[in-house]
Length: 332
Image 1 (cartoon, rainbow, N blue to C red):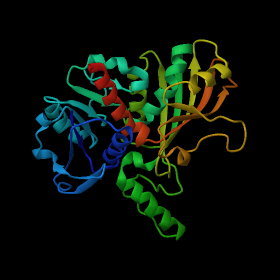
Image 2 (cartoon, rainbow, N blue to C red):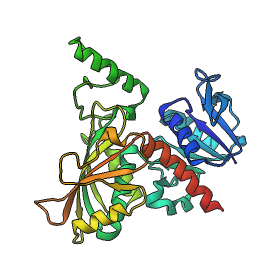
Image 3 (spheres, helix red, strand yellow):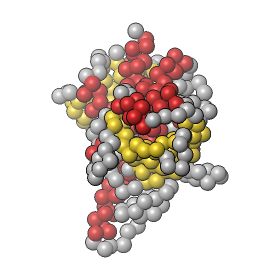
Image 4 (tube, one colour):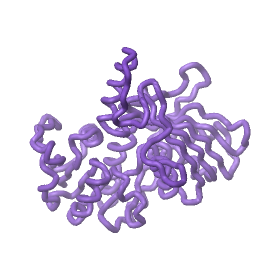
């Protein structure tokens, strides 16, 4: 089996390489692809040096699986060309709401891999992935009616430039130097910005609408979802505060048991100082962490949750590789 990674020099592309190595993913040939600007660069993988190739000139007939991690514009231009020869696993939002393209989080809806029509599989949004992984076992048991989610998203979700800018702005702020934002609408250092992606006419941002629409497509169209997405001055890992309303009665003991035994989840929930997970601690971890599990004191059918996960790993690269594993397993 031959695989390619489009956007191999970016944050997610490099993380996909890390996941492939840790999982010892089996393949015969590996092709690392990027823009003409990055072609010729050398990347070390499993003690072997690979040369990055120009995406524009690459022949996808050499590949069986192609990971796309270079954004929506690149996916729009090249994914369907690649899909003529290989299965495309795309990390952008470009194909997510296409009814002929399955939107997959393997722990939640791997069965939808049977519905591939365009040879393209979409990887969900990072903030959606960690949320639905935690909600799947709860929905199966109690039937979710409504989700109210507020996110606290790291700057790495916007790319390397915003990460560098946070570090730069932090230094300027500490030196009491005037700050001019380049990648953000406001100063990000020592601040929180309730705005990720562009605004729609409804007042919701595109990021918020992604969470709403993707959750419905992946988990259940009947679930009502409302979201507020916030960018905060953290480099890696997203956190989310959820209020989840169920149709059926529940107990906290049962919820904790379900989450503790769910694939991809880890409960860290002690009612004491530090008895919860934070974004710094989640960095580099595969799990979706759940803390602050408590009943909504205004609604006996609702529960509050704090969910944290590494957005580059769990919310992108790991999910993409797990999609590939599930696809290969299905084809055997």
